[in-house]
Image (spheres, rainbow, N blue to C red):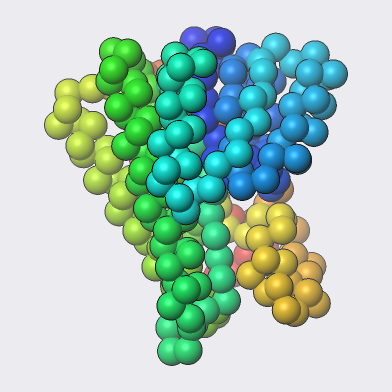
Length: 255
């Protein structure tokens, strides 16, 4: 990880859960981290914690709505003017709505697609352009995907969400191919966790907190820090090593 010290990583969805854990881990490794989310109060608190802990890196909170292209472009412009540009892009932000295929709302589908697919793709494009402008040839783009991007879960409320994550699987491989065609050494990786103990289930089942809590009670789930360690592993591999996808789930998870 020494070669990444003092370089800049963008982490989307950094206000909690996996995003916050990844941001903290990167700051511990000495990176400058721009952590973005729609609300930045939690990121500001995390930045203060990292500073008081004496971590060698810095966490820079930035408000950005990943469903709004203008917000994303404004963020990349600010990063360019204030910090040169992005060397690592961690596309972590994700959204799930309990909208089934047979009776789901179009607005719920659009919300998921705009963040999980379009937002991720816009960030990827802008990160690559930032690297190319500065002749950065060893950058890394990591998409935090899901096991639902590899097999459809047997819960109707997660089917459209699963479709967006299948898209992330295809987008990551397509990105890897295009980066090769562009003759760069920028790498693309997908990390696909199973059940991680975060607020995810409580947002998906926002009208049924008991059902949300049950998601995490019947097994020992992954922790956000487990996913953050996978990110550090991927970044620490030698430049000639292409890690395409890491699929990780709790040992006790069946489906």
